[in-house]
Amino acid sequence: MDNLNTFRKEILELDKQILQLLSERGTFVQKIGIEKQKLNLKIYNSKREKDLIVQLKSSNKGPYNSMMIECIFKTIFKVSKELQVKDNLPKHL
Image (cartoon, rainbow, N blue to C red):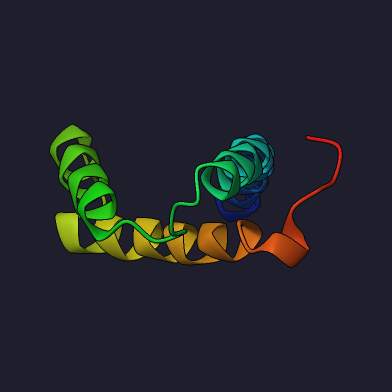
């Protein structure tokens, strides 16, 4: 049981780091949303998303397989698009 608790504590620390990185990513996503508005561009760019998925899958060293990586990042991309909607953009960026 000690190992299990130790592993869970390690995972919690990693999850906190992931959350911090997602927050930082979200700030940049919002900045991109503002730029897209200025340039009158659509929020969704399917080619860009597909290219990113290919790059991420090729950088994957496991233990998650390519389908899992795609699923994780498609979820991140989906909620990131929501951050770029005008009502979700901060006024000060």
